Image (cartoon, rainbow, N blue to C red; front, top):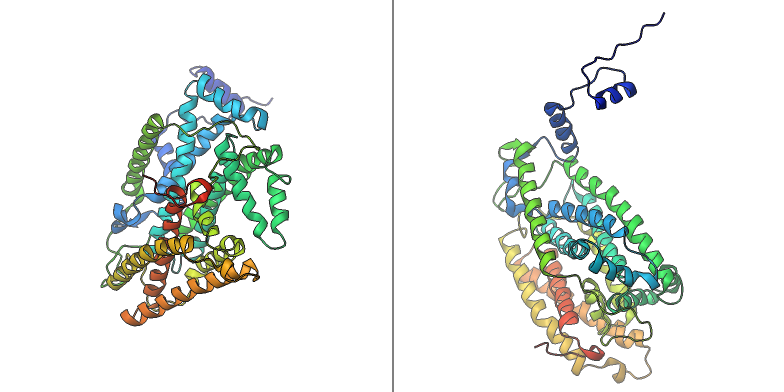
Length: 461
């Protein structure tokens, strides 16, 4: 007769249930060593076993990559909680937000954490992007990870835009109307893309349904897939770039230390500090909520979300074809091509490429700080190509001509600064990058604080 295994009598009820499911030898309920091995193995899928000690300096990364992970985790966690209350229908969306804030325990706090984490993620991801660029961490073997990082940043922007509509208040409704309205300026496919995203000719119930599905399912899935891949690619590239001065050899790695606990402990501390900051900030400042969306009453001025205001400001100075399509596409292509340009020197790990690179980056920032406001004022009060070239298509008078003038000025600056300071490709490209970056930041600041009713220039004080 077959013999059955005897279940030991000194087992708890839970152990007996487990034994009935898995008749094999039971492991102790608490196995610290096993948990430790499991945790270490999981961590080491995305981190090397040992890291150069110099990469542990906080001033190399500022903890920005880890901060992004913390903020994404907060967004997913609070987003799941919000789904229990939120109703994605125009008639109930606004009321569900009010109910959440007034009657749900900690509902206002959960919404605040979600809102500020989303905005914080844009800032952190942008700063991380700048850190990677200015430490030249996009050179071989990290070229493709730069592309993945740009894709992740785009997903973060889309996540914030789609989530922006969820409250269905005046601020959200008209901001999304502005952003989706820009799509019509894309030749041929623009109107089709706009109708597809809106679910119709105007922002309405179908738009909210589309944005809700994209915001809560499609984009989070992309983030969950790409973020681990991004970290894994960093591990396969040998970890972070090693910080060094221009005089140091790129191959000088220095001593290495164990990832556990040297790196992980620092990341945990940064995560806890960030979480505490978001929590306190969310307790002090509520997420904005204006009156319920009214399609028949447009606020004055109507502005895009703050992270797209720079593009909206460009629409004030260039024809939409150039402001929304040609200029952004050229910038995106340039960013995607950046890792594959033939550089004259290997500068990975050197902040701002060299001492000369730091100086020329500062010169570029000062040039843009002076030229951009002057250009805005001149276009607002002096220059009027449309009136001067009566009968000429607007795409030429307000598009091609000002675009050509700006492009000529940038090319002249590039030639002048490269010859004057005998710059390498690395240093010259960095100077142009800083020029564009500073100009765009000034356009964003102008659009947020210096545009009033009718989008006229105002002094905010």
